[in-house]
Amino acid sequence: MMNVFVYGSLLFPEIADGLCGQKSKSENATLKGYERFALKGADYPAIIKKDKSTVKGKVLRNLDENAIYLLTFYEGDEYGMVPVKVETNSGIINAVAFVWMAGNEFLEDYDWDEDKFESESLAFYRDEIVPATRAEYYRRN
Image (cartoon, rainbow, N blue to C red; front, side, top):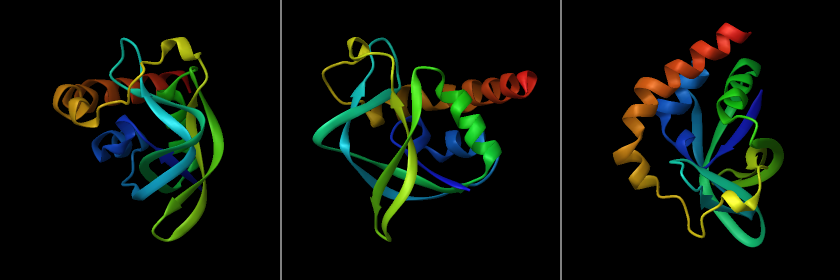
């Protein structure tokens, strides 16, 4: 079982639970030493290592191996799974985070807008992206 720090589309239970195929236990969390950015031409964000920065998000608790594989498939090759320590109301816990690996030239110079994603993209992700991702994952595996 593994904890996953999320900071973008996976903040929304409709997406995280839909992908994982299970109701995820989550709690608010903060990741120090990273910063979140919007990505050029995309409606999802990235985080990169950056001293004296923090990212607010959630930690999905105790995900099974299948859920981790599905999330890794969803995140794609541009992200690497990195071990991190996150602060929660119940203390500091070990987790993994999907960190942007594809180059800083793809980053905007501003933070990702969670409210904009919710109003403009969430329904599409819930109704189209999540089922298509699960179908493609199971087709390949």
